[in-house]
Image (tube, rainbow, N blue to C red; front, side, top):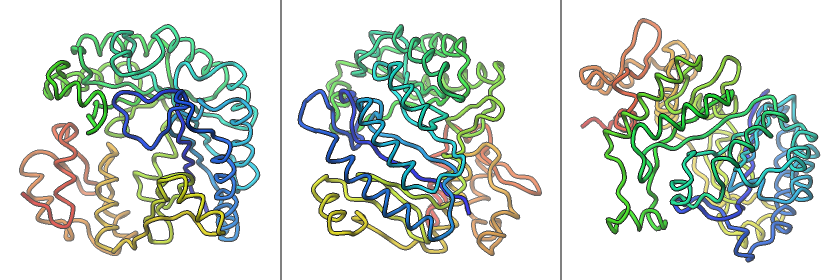
Length: 383
């Protein structure tokens, strides 16, 4: 049986001004990764034995953060060796998140030597002034060099970009995307900036000193970007994701298809054995559980059948192909058109979804309003 594993590395070089992820900036000198890597290996050993005894093979492995490549070469070697030693890997798609400015030829060699075959490069923008506003500590030229280094060492290279940034007009976003397309990455992710409460960027925007583009302007940026990517041969396969043939992210497809997966590391989430769970979020709690021989799970809840059906539909609608009626029935034993009859009728009337004899999917108008669509399926959320 196949499954997926996510490994969280909660370290970054510096904290970006918009980031509220569970991460610790190494620049402050308050955190040493050595103890965390020891604990991570303990959890990998626990989870690896569980997977092997259940007859599972790990076919996608994703190491995210934070910024995994903020670790030193020796620390990366230790982390990747732990994955190889403890997880039942079976020719996996093995992705590591990378930020420009944290990757050098030696780290690239360590990654590729251990079997990493895909990297996700967090470029975000190619305008130096906006990068500084975001707290990104590299330049556009360094981002370009990082991509070249990735291209030389890994079979598949993904690039992430942000729209709706301060001081970013529609033409600015298009210019950045055109430059990135000249690099010819295998995969492109386009996200809208989300202001997280308590971050420096959110405070600057709230003060009125740093206005953001209007929502309609950001939507126009993304619409124009989709057209550019289609012309360049990229398949729009998920709301925010585009890939050249054969390069869709297999790991993320596990999430969108609502399949089981295991998360390892501080604050990592799992969907396993009919339950969802979250690991401890503090290093002290994480260590106490693992050093007692226990999984470091802080919260766990059983997924009801209704919740499972909602998850399958909501996550599946993120995919442009949508959700198949027969697939849903085979999995849950119910006809999607009966379970969500009122919600489907309401959204169809608004022109936000469409379906034929075999599948339901977001309509073109529904892509930018996807969250509004999804709320309709959460325990009868019809407005």
